Length: 247
Ligand SMILES: [Zn+2]
Ligand SMILES: [Zn+2]
Image 1 (cartoon, rainbow, N blue to C red):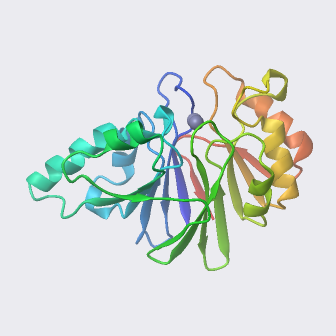
Image 2 (cartoon, protein in one colour):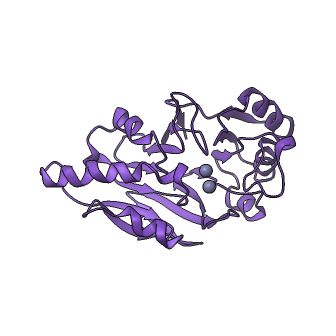
Image 3 (cartoon, rainbow, N blue to C red):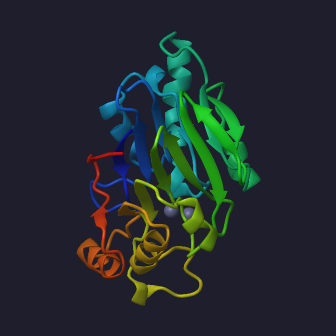
């Protein structure tokens, strides 16, 4: 599998950056899945997948705006493409059903084939087994695991430090985990993990490679790298927009 980071900032981007969005493909590029669709992601997606017919599905971790705002724009591209005969069908969109007001605002004409995800749910998209784990976040949010053959990729979504996520991410080849702030800046009310906590979860989960993401735009990512590296002594990287990560 190949992961391309389309956007790695939250809750808002820095100049020329984009919020959460990741394109997962298999090596032969027969499967394309968009994971999260924050602001700025559609433009980036079209760089790598200009024919939206080739996008198999979209999976959304949760309905916070930094993860869904470009769904509101992508739906225009899909609906207009359908009208012009360029897009053959509604695209499968997997997402949580709450908050209900946000969920109900997403559909436009027949742009999306909306499918609700649940804790413990499992789906298969063209040979990739995908499962979901509810995280600890103020609204319904899911971490997700993608397995193809012996390879396993896990994305944390947004979460506070969450013990069940450790087991869920166990032995993954790549763990894409939020960790966009320094531990000293954390308070109990912050619904995220620090870089240190991301490193701790990755260590306990025995992941082979940790990639930090969901960066606050004004944080020095070099400091995040140092902080996570003090607890996670294996392969550690920072998410970089437009960079590919092979799993
Ligand atoms: Zn977020
Ligand atoms: Zn969030």
